Image (cartoon, rainbow over all chains, first blue to last red):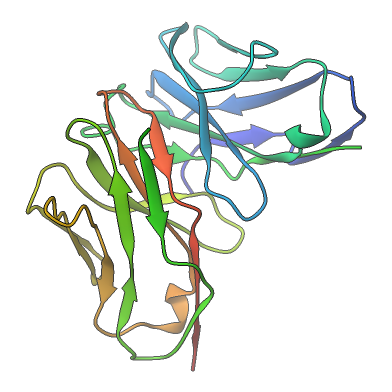
Length: 115
Length: 112
């Protein structure tokens, strides 16, 4: 139990639709990162939010966007869904931005299927 | 670019066997190295880490040594248990913020 909760746990969308995934971080954590994990692969970094601002981004197109709220919870939004967006989306929270000192705590993920 | 390569699974062992899961990396700069574990039905958890060359990370009987000369961070355990059955991910970070680059994962199955 990491204290990071994600919703929904599973969802199915059709190509072209939009989706919003939510993450509640562990109490006191001010940094949230999002990862995409395709089947049989390791997680890939999407972006990170620190105190409500985007603070680093991986190789994902602009249709992947996010928000972090004053209570440090976060949303991941994906527009114009494509079949390849089908994956497990992981949220991770930490006390600070530096993984050398700030351990990442992962949620169990939201599994998105795009038909 | 930066990347992590780990041995393909599944790895199937009997209880009390010795475990090695190989991990090598390519990185510009000086990465920190991590092993994460994903137990069935749970989120990823940090198992151990090492932040500089020759450091040894250890936790729950698992160990890994940061070898800069061979760009490796192999995971070892002297005697595995059924409860160690999980997927293990090797990862690195460069740049001082929480961008982790993960390997593809290695599934371990331990039988009684």
